[in-house]
Image (cartoon, rainbow, N blue to C red; front, side, top):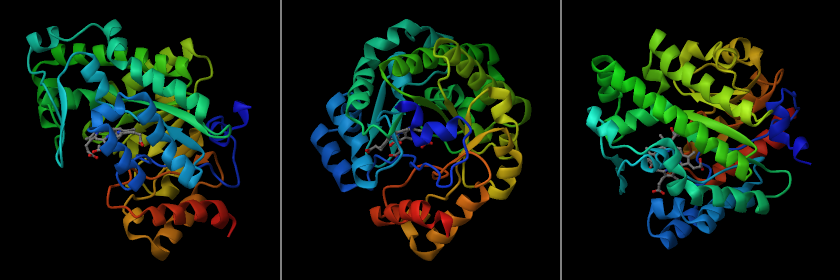
Length: 347
Ligand SMILES: Cc1c2[nH]c(c1CCC(=O)O)Cc1[nH]c(c(CCC(=O)O)c1C)Cc1[nH]c(c(CCC(=O)O)c1C)Cc1[nH]c(c(C)c1CCC(=O)O)C2
């Protein structure tokens, strides 16, 4: 009975004594079994596009920790690739893409309906997972939010303050807006296909939302999230959406109401007490534990985990980190966090 899955209950607004738990980047290099499967695949993109291996790494943290949700193994940069950008990963450095600097670069991109040619293996991964996951584990699909995806497409790589994207936004707003519109449309089609394949929840990762301020945040973080959420809910009534405007700061307040998302994921920079009063009043919240605790562990990890569980205990809450777990993390610390949430929550 998928309606009774613990994660979906929190997303519907239910307050639970022990919150559901999963972890951003839960399938990743901190796990020896991930490193083994990745070595078998050869490289990261091969892993993303090989359904049985992508499903295998998705399932690994579920087997090890019994998380309440699995997140599809893929990457936010598959959408630019499906739109025709070149994409490759440089070992130890991160992603590289062909850049969008002028109109002719944009004109060379593919139309939105072409994305499924590239992304079909991802939908197959979702179908495999829908079949293989334990019956109480929810399946989360995801995509990058348009602003964050645009920052990579414009700069061709990760950038500390997203300067190239801000320069294009200010210097050529017409081109910038058509790029955002293209990514927005592609994201709706991509997430819709994931839902049709069996994703029960979708999450929008806006990892660089924090560098948008004031009206720019409203226009390029809030508004695309609203458009995407509205379109998905029109096509798939009741589908829950999680928004992650990382670094939004005080803009976290009101984000759920303005965008229509069912749950707001919090980074570790916001105070849990403040977020309970100003974000959780509108619905479910997720996240907030600093990922560094997965490296350092010990009593500080236990104390912080309990503090966050307590701070959000009066409303709907999904336990998670404030950002992805890092490769240096100790798998034993993840175990300690899970045990603390499940056993220590009452203590
Ligand atoms: C910005 C971003 C990306 N990808 C993603 C984001 C948004 C979330 C965030 O802010 O972290 C999202 C993402 N990336 C990955 C997932 C899979 C699901 C999961 O969370 O377990 C998800 C949800 C796998 C991955 N995506 C990547 C890895 C590591 C690749 C490897 O195995 O070498 C994984 C497991 C690579 C990646 N992918 C990206 C970068 C910048 C990098 C390189 C940095 C790094 O190496 O950690 C782009």
